Image 1 (tube, rainbow, N blue to C red):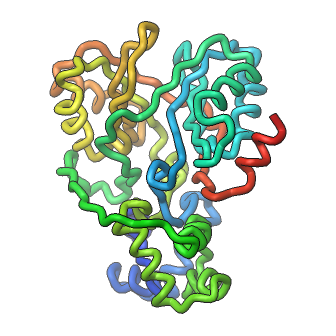
Image 2 (spheres, rainbow, N blue to C red; image 1 turned 60 degrees about the horizontal axis):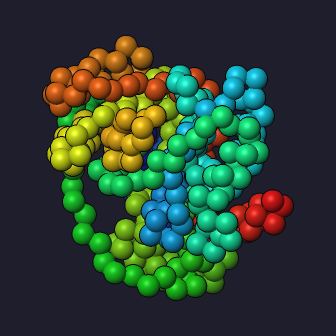
Length: 330
């Protein structure tokens, strides 16, 4: 049941008064059994977090993938400097000349903005070079590890229609609560509703407005991939002719093992413009899948960047005073 539970909670976690009861009913077991198992998986660090996953751009934040070229003797210190910025959610050492890869976001009211912030980090870390790789086109963002082994190799992507929304102070208050990791209790949303002075109905109405507008991508569980048995992840990078970028991007995004797929800019020193993150249990599995993607797409110029060290991996905390505090210290 453990694998079924993990897959179910990664897919979507119900935003209702008694969510663990609903999950239990789906898996034909008891609420108590689900609560015990979820707590066990959290204690074992297999479950990293269960919370809302928001669309950074829709919340007014500017973001980009960034790669720095840092000499070996400066790597650890550079990673610490980069990690100290609250807008860095992921930071990895990868097997390439551009060896430190991180995602960077700045708040809507940032006095420096994205490019200047990256320049400050480049200077502080002593990076020899850096490339800024913002998203030009997103085909997929959906981290769901196939813990059941039953998932099809390919899945058709659903195009979601989103409703318009104007964020109110109440929406922002709800976002601040929904981005927190839930506690493993029968009513995990009770504390948030009491803190905000909202009834369950009012709280979930606001939460669902965020979801229907696309501001919230989903409410779900994120796993610690390696502890969940997915020991390899490769960032496959592809040099795609501009006129074929969209077509090939959509095709690659259909692979279930691909969690993220984007078109990004290329540079004279970086010819790759299509990025597809591949997850598998072993490096051999990753390699096989990437070879299959190459064969299907007909692309011959590509690379595989494996992460060797995870410096930082956490959800971005939105509307956090830490952004302003970092800028004041610079």
